[in-house]
Image (spheres, rainbow, N blue to C red):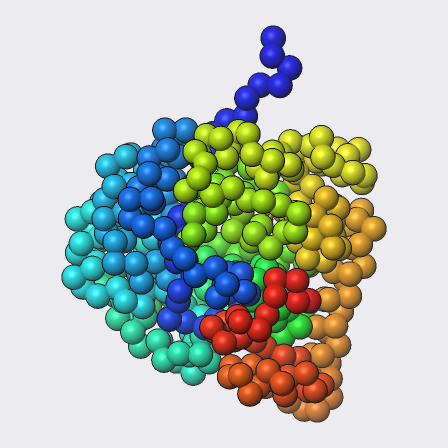
Length: 402
Ligand code: FES
């Protein structure tokens, strides 16, 4: 009997086709320094990546970015994925989804589209993305529905929009959404940079959870609501990616292969590239994919924890961002010696909210960094800062800016 059976191949292939994006969302999970990684693989290179992944057993293929619609070859890639037998999913802001492209994607065999909104009103949606896109998104959602796909809407939740939960669900209902994903912010990339502004209060979360439960009763099966509590408010970590290099393979625009989208900021790694290595080698042999696979890498408290089979030690990226070492237990876990850091982030958010109440204001109060001249001013402001995801800010941020 083989004591170390070969692990299974990847099931999920995420093709991050580009880091380019017409939106500037404050919670974007792309690397904050994406401007330093601007090269993109060719159509042929993406096809070869898909072919090799499918041969290893991958069945789900997600196209994301950035905004994948900015790639002119999206339809060709979808058609190829479909031909290979993948279940194909497009994760998009919807901007650029003109009727002709919708038709072409339908003809290419695209199985699933997920469109994102930032909030329920034009003012809030457009402020969070620093664009004028709300009206366009409304039209796009209707066009997607008319083309016969189930309507899947994604709204990332945080302090600045959680209080609009009723309006968000009402909007989804009006649009005939079948599946509404209310995804509380995960603090990576730009969201980590902006966490002081985005972490909600306990009251906000409790209220939102209650409203979602009430809406579920009211809506029955007409619309499914998924509400995921933000990590920082939990006491046990999430089984991130279902375990490092267990089912998930993410390919960055330049061909860098990653066990999760956020991992490229981890120091001490040489992530392999699909342009120079075969997927089979990357998945089974590369140090980057093997390093945190299984549990032999774990230190205490994970090593001796009975839950390690369920949570795999949590998230390596979160462990690095908050504790400085990816091997540490995810500090979301109450057993982690660094758990107090997560508690401190959450407490700061409560404190800031209380200060607002004292001032009699319920308007969010933060300093916006949208243009280069704001970057210098941001250093001196006493307010929480929000960095908009844009090229200029990206050039000035490094992945370890905390
Ligand atoms: Fe990278 Fe969790 S986001 S391991």
